[in-house]
Image (cartoon, rainbow, N blue to C red; front, side, top):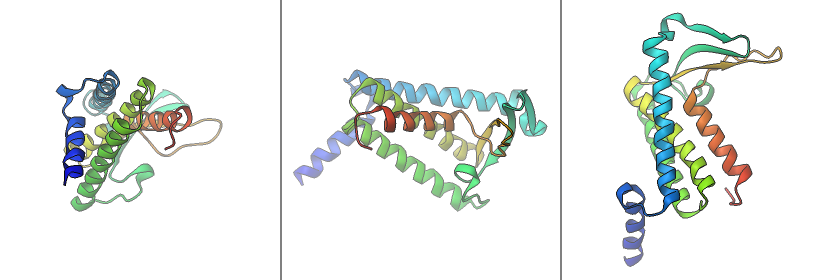
Length: 178
């Protein structure tokens, strides 16, 4: 019972931002918030300013970078796509669970500012995609890159880039075992 009380105390401390005394944990949350804002600002611009949903595609630096609109109702590469509301809520729940475990891992294992910054990239990206699923029913994807005769038919977004960079950096540039 005492162990359970101690476990609950440090879990509650993780999410009480006003009680964060550790600078690197503050960095974690600030980076996550910054990534979320950048992700949502780009998606707002794509949806409501550029109106890419109507255009479907816009060459930025063809063939290397194209804005190609897609509603992603699944996970990477559209896997598990479905119009069912149940699938949307399952994906939201799984992503929130992942966010919770990323935060636990960051709080308990990652200790350097760099590690926690990269974990903030992951949390911010995941939060951006959860935000999309909650408010739009699907994730807004719009970045498409092709190169060297290889045509990529999949789109992604800023949140996906942040998640990839964060995980890559933690795996390859951290002294911690993942």
